[in-house]
Length: 77
Image 1 (cartoon, rainbow, N blue to C red):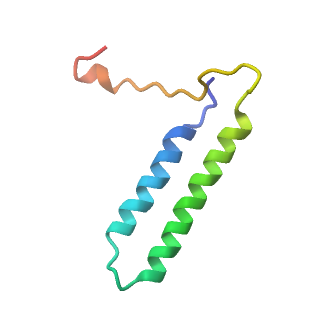
Image 2 (cartoon, one colour; image 1 turned 120 degrees about the vertical axis):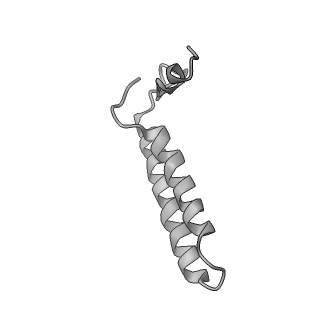
């Protein structure tokens, strides 16, 4: 099922981006760390809820697959 928007990449990307930003913030800025963690988790939750809403339970199986062609560049097929 192609939805046009890469929900899986956005879900993973929002979580990883939040973690990387938090890793760069010094420990004394605890409030900023909590705010960024809240924003990153809320964003991931929104993407997860969008995926849940678009999933067709009657068909079952894998949905929301993303196909990337980057492996052809290094010689894999």
